[in-house]
Structure formats: structure tokens, C-alpha cells
Length: 431
Image 1 (cartoon, rainbow, N blue to C red):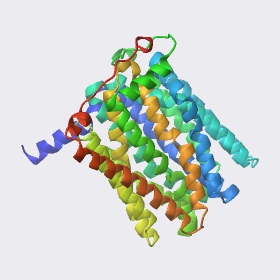
Image 2: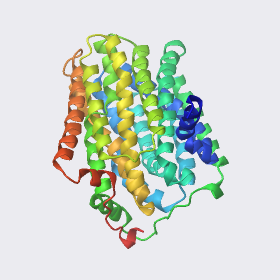
Image 3: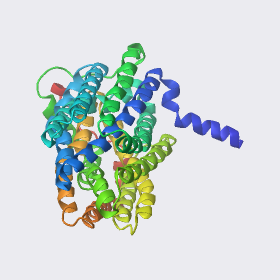
Image 4: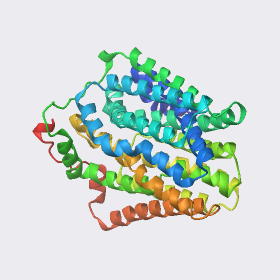
């Protein structure tokens, strides 16, 4: 095969889900615009809390409040996703996100903003996130089908993290040049793109999935099903630990930028943007691969994430930290996509919403636990406190990754368990 033919074949593999699904093309465009606004908002929110309080603990509390509803309500959101039309759920939740962003713009622009107001809006946005995430995560298969779901998750992750390259940098410019209120207005407007994409989709082209009944016991049955199914339980446990103790960038990076390296919003934006660049590369690489995800790959990417976190925490100067953000973004994105698609492919269709709700709980709902801990560690010392938080998170990821690899060597049938699905029956009341 000629180099040109190989390049063409590679491009077809990479953009498979976009080629086969008009609905997914619309969704991906809307997500790219909306995700840019999301990262602009996230960067501005962290900087606003730091301006108001000069406290790492306050940063941790704000992040915790944003994701606390996911921990409390995420499983219920999964029940709704399995029971009702996911596209309609997403239209309502995206509209609600826009409203909260406009509210944040209003209180900042009118100069009445206080910390408690930021906290309240974070909780409200988190409540809508608990409903949005299970529907969104389980919507990919309906748009592209099971054969292309890994590709779709990877491309969507590429769009989200590609926006992470632009979003923080754009937020830094807006904050420095025109004021901290404008990122929130931009975020509110960005949701219109994904709402329009959802409205323009063709329901007749969806890959219809089995829905659960409306009888009682769905939440309990979904939890029991995930725990008894080996192909779901193991990745969920690994991700729960890593997401809780290693995924604390929103708390630690602004403190690392301001206190350790004596930077400003631009420094924070640059660190976030380079992590986003690495994440984008990681998502595109995985989009080009058609191998089924496994526990072995999850372990390798877990180790790589831990190494990158330790490198950033020990970086002697800002340029070294900036350089290490790229491999961190790559490794963590590969870890996240591998875990996500393992759950998507191993879950029964009528329980996929509840399984992906559990993914949301361990991914986002773990933040109320990890973020305050990271903020407290960062407050131990203004200079090396953020470093300690990053190194500690890296150590946890390394321990989990090497533990998985050690377990694989000890188990003669580890490959069978990792690659396949040992599935427990889903109770009739849940199906």
C-alpha cells in the first residue's frame, strides 16, 4: 500500500463516526463550540474565587460544590437516561447550563458578586450536570452504533480537549484585557450551538437502544448489576481511586501558577492549554485505534498519568512544568477514554445510562472528596504545597497502575477477564 493510500485509510479510521453519522457530525460541532465556552468559564471561575478569597481551600470547596450533586444525584440521572429520550434531556440540561452562565455574568458585571453566590450557582450547575452526564455519555451509541462508539467517544474527547487548548488561553486574555465577567457571557452563548445541533438531528437515523421499564427498583438493580459484572466493576474501582486523588487540576494548577511560579491568569491559562493540547493528541491517537480497550491498557495509561503528575510537582521552574503538561494531558485522556469505552461496550443497552451514571459519579462525583483534600494540602505551604498535592496525586496513580500490572502477572486468566465481559444478569424489574 502506498503512503498516500495508508494516510487515506488512517484518516477514514480516525473520523469513522463522523463519516457514518450526520447526527454525530452535528453533535460534535456543537460540542466543540460549547466546550470552548465551558473551559473559558472554568478558568474564569477558578480565578474569580482566588481573587475573592486568596484561598486554596475556597477553590477546593467551589469545585467540590460543583460536583457534589453528581455524587448525590448521578445514579438517579442514570435511571432517567435509561427511561426517557436522551436527546430531549440534553436539550433541557444544556439550556439550564446557559442560564446559570448568564446568571454568573450578571452578578459579576454588576459588581455584586460574593463568594456565597458563586457557591450557589456552582451547586445549581452541578445539579443539572448530574442529569446531563448520564444521558450524554450513553447517547454516543444511539448516534453511531456499537461498532463506532470508541471512535465517537475519542473524537468527542478530542473536541472537548481541543477546546481546552483555546478556552483557558482565551479566558486569560479576556480577564486581562476586558474584565472577568465576559468569559461567563461567552460561555452562556456557546450553549446555543449544541442546543441547535440537538434540535436539527434526525431521530429516524438513531440506533435505537432498549429502554428500561418504569417499574420500581431501577437504581438498586443498576448498582447490583454493575458490581456483579466483572467487566464493569474493575474499571470503575480503578477510576474511582484515580479520579478522587489524582484529578485535582482545577484546584492545584491556579495555585501552582500564582504561588509557586509567581505567575498570573495567563500562566494558569498556559498550563491548562498545554494539558489540553496533550489531551487532544491522546484523543486523536485513540480515535485511530480499533482495538478493544482492556485493563492492561488502563494500567499503562494510569502509570503514565502518575509519572507526569510527579514530574510537574517536582519541576524546578515554570518551563519544565509547561513541558510536562503535554504528556500529562495525553496520558490522562487515554486513561479516561479507555475506561469510558470499556464501560460503554460491557454494559447491557437497557442499563447503559445507569452504568455511565456511575462513571460520572466516579469521574466527577469524586471531586467533592478529592478537591478539598487537595486544597488543604496546597495550603500547608504557599510555595511547595501545590507541588506536594501534585506529587501525592501522582503517587496514587502510580500505585494503582503498578498494582494492576502486578495483579495481571499473578493471574493466569487476567487477559480473558480484561478483554471479555463476565456479565451478571440484569433483574427483570430493571429491564
